[in-house]
Length: 363
Image 1 (spheres, rainbow, N blue to C red):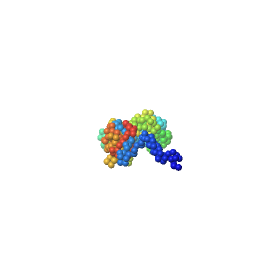
Image 2 (cartoon, rainbow, N blue to C red):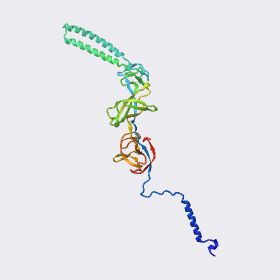
Image 3 (cartoon, helix red, strand yellow):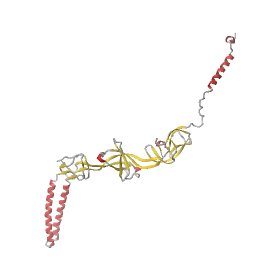
Image 4 (cartoon, rainbow, N blue to C red):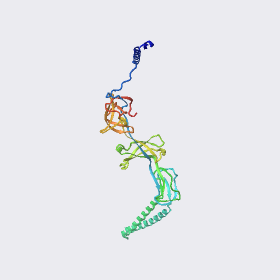
């Protein structure tokens, strides 16, 4: 019995049916889009997506940051010029005193006695000199005898002046108006020139001392404005530069600067730490780019610009540098499209496409 008799078909019929099914399957898949073919080896590289910045001129304040210390406008440590016992203290700790106020009196009884004695001797010698002057006019004594009396009188007067100068040192006055700190002596105590009595400070105005790098020394002039901040305060204070050190510190290669600021009420205290911001110059139309967009080169520095959908290498000349940006003085112009990312992956002439655009290099 044959196979066709059992199943009613032949192997040829089966093969034809399978072939028909395959045709139908392929026809059904023909409506779907095929996957994109991979780039052939050696073909054009795909464009790299990058971020770019549109170069626009902006105001550049050439500002440097530093740290400084507040100083009293005037400061003196009160001391006695002579040794003696304190008979009176005429101030309170923390008090504000005017210039010329008597602050401390030192025992002067011995000096007063010496002055009285010297004045008496001076009076006697003055009478003697007057008598001898009359005798000299009458030719009764020699000129040499008169000169001896005259010289003794002058010597006595010098001794009197010396005692008076010593007496002045027993009275300690405020050399300027200011605030007195804590005193280091007590009434009845014995003081010497080595004994600190108190600290007197003039707090309005107040000084700020800071240093700037050597390279900025030619840019800073008296009258420049300084902005500073105190610890724990967000309010800026303004000070004016009034003096610049005459030489560069050889160890730190910095230049010391001092500025003054009004301090009504004395709320700013000498010795306080200050954060300084100093504007050295102002450029109204500067071309600024992010520092990370600059590529070091053997011949200098360069950047990558986007032109015609491709990366173009452009050498540049830089100027002022800030914390985040660099001023470009030559090589780019307003409206240029600066590539800021993918710099290590790009070569000049490589195709690029914009992923994100910012209008300012600082963004």
